[in-house]
Length: 343
Image 1: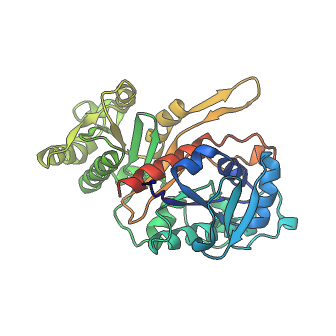
Image 2: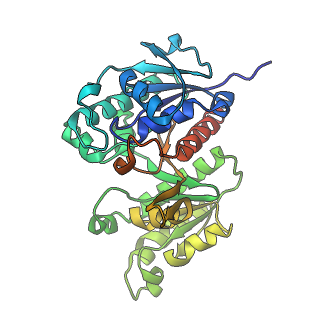
C-alpha cells in the first residue's frame, strides 16, 4: 500500500523578501513531493513573480480550499489570499502591505492546521517591523502562533543536525530576560525539549542546562540565579526522570553539545542560544560579502499544531536577485514531516 503523505502548508513570508523565492525553489524539488503534499499559503501574483526570480518552471494552480490542490511535481498549489498589489510591491523594502500579507498567510496556515486540513505548517521569513507597521503588535512567529492557538506553555527550539537549543526567553530585553530565569519556567522548557527530542526519534534525550552568569556564577560569586532558580529546576527534573545536567557554564555547554554529550541544550535567553547555534549553521563568505550557507530551523514547541520555520531573516539585501538558498526551508519541511509522522 502506498504511504499516505502529510499535507504541509508553507507560508510565503514577507512578499518583499527572499521568502517567495525560496518557496518557489522548494516546490521545484522532486524530493519534497516524495515526502509530503505541499501547499503554498500566500498571493499568487507574488509567487508568479517569484518563480521567475528563482529560475524555476512551475504551473500555478490557485485554490480556495485545500481539497482543490492537485499535489503534482511541476505545479505549485497556492491557497491564494489575493492580498498583494504586485505593481506596488518593492523588493527589499519594508511596507505595511507586505506586513499584512505575511501576517494573513500565517493566520490562514494556523486556521487550516487547527481544522486538521493540513498536518503541519512551515513558515517563511517575516519582517517584524513590517508586521507591526501593518497594525499587528507581535514580536515574531512564535508569539503569533501562541496567541492564535491559545497556548501558554511554549518555547522556541532551534535545530541544526545534532545541535538543538531551546530558550527560556526570547524576544525581550536582556534586562528582562534575567528576571525571567525562574525555576518553573526552566522546568517547563526542559519538559518541552524532552518531548520534542522524542518526536525527532531520540528515545532518551540527554539535556544540558546553561547557567545565566559567567562560569555559572562560580558558587554564587557572580550571581544567585544558578543556586536559587536553575539548580532547583534541574534537581526537580532529575526527580521526574529526565536525563538532565546543569547548570553548565554557557561557554562550555555548547561545545560539549557539538561533541555529542547532549541531545539538546537549554539556553537562558535569546542570544545565549542563537549565537552558538548560528556559528554552527551559518557560513559567511568574505569574498562575496554574503552568507554562503544558511542552515538550521526554528520549531515552536508546545503548540497543539506543528510549526517549523527557517531560522534566518528576510534577507532584504538579496531579495529579488535569485541567489537565496532554500536549504533551511527544505530542512524545515523535512522536520515538519517527521513531526507529523509521530503526532
